[in-house]
Structure formats: C-alpha cells, structure tokens
Length: 385
Image (cartoon, rainbow, N blue to C red; front, side, top):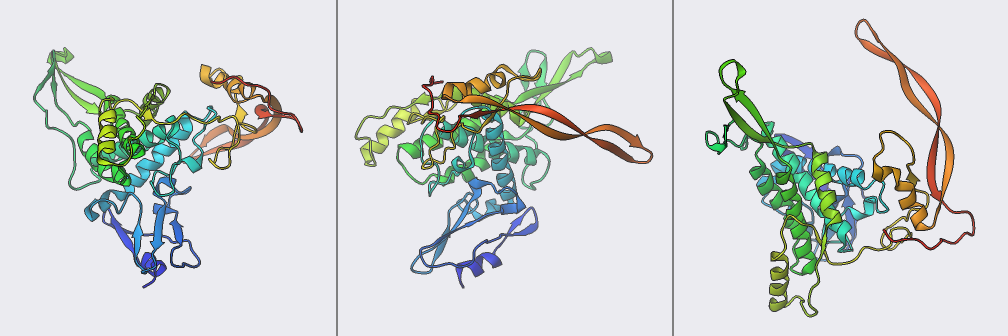
C-alpha cells in the first residue's frame, strides 16, 4: 500500500469519534516529503502540527509530530493538544502584535526536523507558549469532563490551606495537564545537544507559567454569611494572563554561554545538562542573539518592518502600543505614512420581537499609520531596542 493510500485509510479516534486525516498531495516519490495540513479541520492549519510522511527507499514511512511520538493510547487527547498548540500560537501573535518580531508563521514549527532554525529568545518564547497552551487546554478539558479517566483535583480537600481556610471544591487538575502535555511536547526533542536542552527547558518554563498563574477561588461558610471559614480551590486563569507572564519572562530571558567543546560526546552532554540544571525552569533561556528584525531576511523568513501598521492614538491604547510607530518605523529608519481608509461596522442595532437583532451597516473614514520609505530612500541609522 502506498503512503498516500495508507493516509487516506488512516483514522484516529478522538473522544469516541473517528476523524480522518487529509493528505493534500498529487504524487509521492521515494525520498520525498509531504506536509499533511488542515489537521482536525482547523483553518488556518496549526504549523506545529505539520505531519510529515517520509517515504524511504525501502518504501517504509514514519510520522514526525506530536500525535504519534507517545503511546497510541494518548491519541484520545490529540484534539485537545491540537487546540492547545493553536491557542499558544494565537497568543504569541497577540503578545507580539506591535513588536518588530510579530510571531511570523514560518517561526511556528517546533519539530526538530525542518523546524525553528534559531536558538534566540523568540524561539524560547514560541516553545514556552506552545507548551503552556497544550497544558492549559488539557487541564481545562479534563475539568470539563471531556476525558473519562480524569476529573477535578480533590487530593488536598479537607486539608488546612492557610489561616481560616481549607482546601475543598473542584480544583483544576494541572497535574494531569502537565503530565500529558509533557508526553506530547517534549517527545519532539530527540537530540541531546544544547539546542534540544534549551527547547526542553523552555517547554518546562511554559508549563511552570500555567501553574504560577493559577487563581485561588474561595467560598465562605458561617452563620448568616459571617465567613468564619472558607473552602478554596485552584482555577485556571484566562490564558491571556499566562501569555503576559511569559512575555515578561521573554524580556528577562537568560543567554546561556557554553564552553567550546561542549559537543555531542558523553562529557559534552554532561556539561550541557549541568549548565541548564543550574538555571531555574521558571526562566526562559536562549543560546543566540536575535537578528535585526527591522530588516527583511528571506533566509530566516523575516519580513522586516517596512509596510507594518502601527498605532498612535486611542484612549484604550497602552504605552507599548502608543510607541509602536517609533519602535517599528522611526527606530528602524523608516517614515510613518498616514493612509485614510473606510471601515464598515454594525451600528444602530435593535431588538425585534421575536427574536432577532437587526443592525445597520455604518461606514466611517479612519486614519491608519504604516512604516514606509520613499523610492530609492536608504534606511537611516537606527537605534537598537
């Protein structure tokens, strides 16, 4: 049976359902590679989940991805893993929307095969936020009862938690989410070099971020609501809080300097392990400096900041957003160009019995700002961030 035929016949059980994979390919030759996209009917496809069907000359094939690296029993969690990784990528794009590096799609492959090429702090963030997204979604779906073998964490119920309160209720089971996500995400790293150690460290930092941002929720008990004692449990925060926490860690990421000669020998691997073991797994780490994101670099898949939109005015804008034109344009030697554009929004909405809401379409002219340079203009000297 050919690789294509096998993929068309392959189905994976997810939560009791059978979901077929989709192979978008016209022909396969020995030694060729094909990406299987549109996994779990997600659009746009999650680049973390690029399935690679590799035909060897012996006509055997293998899969390099999250879903087949662990025990097959773990396939019941595959849709949650896919959704979690996608949420991590969406959060990456949100957190870096007004940065020079804005989480471009080419940066989002975590597989060691044809994946991220750099070992800089942006790579560190991608690994951490993706790992956090997978753990977060698995934990949430566990608490929602999506898995037969998992539920609330009540292991500490009845124990004294602090002055005036006891553990109780239904805590989100982060232990479950942590264990399963580690099986999936860390399985991508098969190497033993410094880059693999860096990726595994940042994967763990992402999981630690979920645990660090958990919220304690309490319920009062006592006569007439006197709250003489409380029962408390832990809940997941909004994932945006996890993203903001990791963005702070990104700015404080540590660069690891390895001694020359710390290669792939047993002694070298030991030195690498000792170096990373000495660094807290709550911190992000990187091995290389970041490139100049002002400039386009097709080799690295970096678009540069020319043509990027920036923000200048708006009551709801934070300080970081208000300074985006300076950061993306001025400090990169580019001018800020104003463009008038027409937007269409719903307005004058009214409720009609029963039961519909009807809105008008309102058009208004707005001013947008973009980084640009005139024809033939050279980039002016710029300041580093």
